Image 1 (cartoon, rainbow, N blue to C red):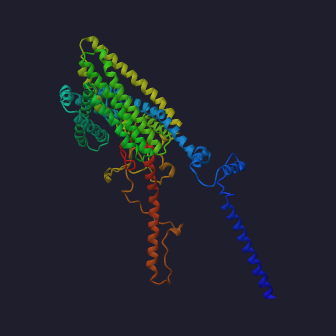
Image 2 (image 1 turned 90 degrees about the vertical axis):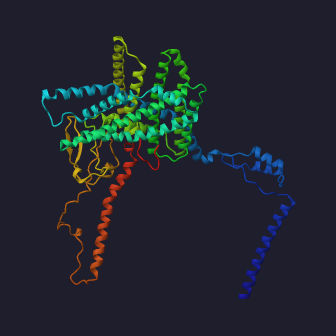
Length: 600
């Protein structure tokens, strides 16, 4: 019986092998005879495969490859973009973003430009009036009697310091000969002037970075509460340092204006062309680098400041040239092509630079609305009653634009270009001053209204009423000066605000305001010792049982130390996350804050 089953199985296997060999022989014979070819891929149509077209193609084309068949395939082959819909949709959105960049960027530039105009006109219009009011209060104070602990309010002290710096620097600028500087620069070669102009741009950025710190140090030294009267002597070195800085920065801007004036008056215009080509070199240095939102915000603020400064320099060049030609209006049309070239190159370079930076870093065009809202928040917060900074100072920190040196130079150029003779000329000066005051007031009203709209759109109005953050100050203070946070009240008296040392929530740590003052560090003092309550036995260290061996005690102590270290790490974690999130907030990014590895 077993032999019979084995023979049947072997016969079945032999039959299957023979069947496979026959099928293989038939297919090989068909291939050799050319009756059937290798079927190419079926062309995909709208939802089905055209079998008749495939068979017709097989009949027309031979199995052997040929040049005719290759050319026909290249001419008739097709593809479907809808198979990679996501990629092509993304490419189209990038094109739309690049097309939106000029419009959104110019909105930000125009808003920032008028912010700089407002801060610049403040020096010529409202600052003299505020200085006069401060002097009037100072002179009439003995007659009216002391109404408080201060002679002047902190804001009035800062205004008087600004006015005194302007007067001293303007008197010192009279000893600087603009004509001699112009001819000294004109005698240099083109390549030397090109190098000098680049060095002046770098020096201007460095001066702006350190200059605002010098002015802030002066304002705080003059207004901080002092226990002894002899502590006021520290204001004198800070004041002379500020005067020296403003004077040097004004001379630096004068050299820039003289170099640009030489470029305008050169016969072949080669120097002006080289200087304008320097703007396009900026594209190479910034486009092919990684940028984040904070870096782009810094660059946008820098572009706003550079554009406004270039416009003021062009105004100075036009005033000097019109004076040399006896205010002939025909010469203004001679200067117009060069002025137009400078302005056009600035706008074109900014648009190209921002368009490609947003393209390469996948940044949407809506980010410029956030930047505009951040600048608007500075303006709105400086108009509050509990504001702790002046608006011009916030603009200087945000954009790196310090109006004092530029104002000193412009006053010097205008006074040397315009001759005042007779009562009619002084009447014209008075009318011009009233026109500047009107322009300043209208500009401030429009900017304040637009800023409120931008802040509401960005939903940032809740940040205006927040308390100062409990983050420690970046500058180390001595324990004797680590008193509670102080903020100036409108009456001029210092108001002490006690801030409880409670752990910060994640929501409050991620929100910061530009109106906050630095507060003392709480980690300089050890916390008070609290005895553990009997209601919480879990907080006590575990005690060994009476019958435990002496060898178990070190292990229990090590376990207790590990638990204490874990608690300390958990306590430090919220502060670290707060420090990281505060860096990413646009309200904490100024012109000279290091974001990543770049300052631009």
